[in-house]
Length: 51
Image 1 (tube, rainbow, N blue to C red):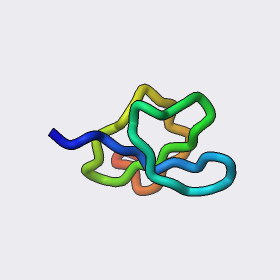
Image 2 (spheres, rainbow, N blue to C red; image 1 turned 90 degrees about the vertical axis):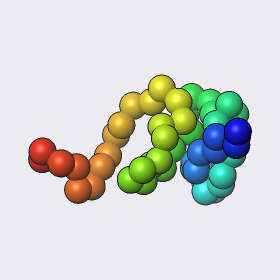
Image 3 (cartoon, rainbow, N blue to C red; image 1 turned 30 degrees about the vertical axis):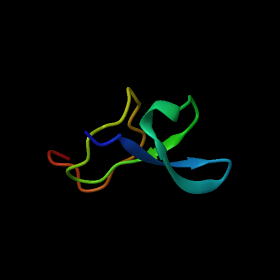
Image 4 (cartoon, rainbow, N blue to C red; image 1 turned 180 degrees about the vertical axis):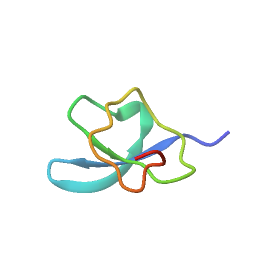
């Protein structure tokens, strides 16, 4: 099984980290088909069905 990763903005830089290293304040980027790596709050979206 592969380790789950997340693409985040942390310290003003975009980086890919292991999902278990996510901390409050990280901005997580999601794309279609991705597994959500943690409990999080969706703050922006584009092309969301039903809008």
